[in-house]
Amino acid sequence: MYICLCNGVSDKAIRQAVRQFRPQSFQQLRKFIPVGTQCGKCIRAAREIMQEELIQIPELKETA
Ligand code: FES
Image (cartoon, rainbow, N blue to C red; front, top):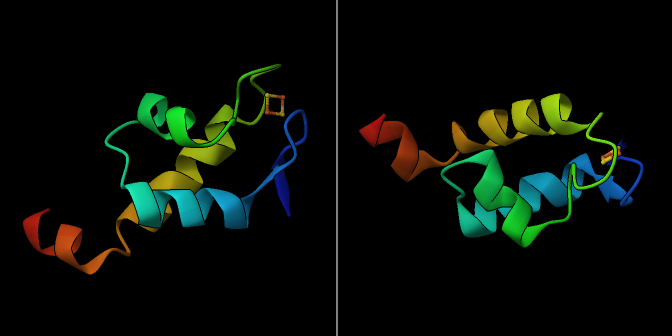
């Protein structure tokens, strides 16, 4: 499913970028994937997906 229509970024692409780069913030995520750089409507949904995915990462779960 597309999350960011402006840039054609899917939830899958966001999850993959989060797993690969482990961004500490949404700003950091945006360095790796062009999400929320145009109209900004997708930012909330993209941030939620990022959080969801971050808590799935086992090593991060232990330190949280
Ligand atoms: S939908 Fe993502 S910037 Fe517009």
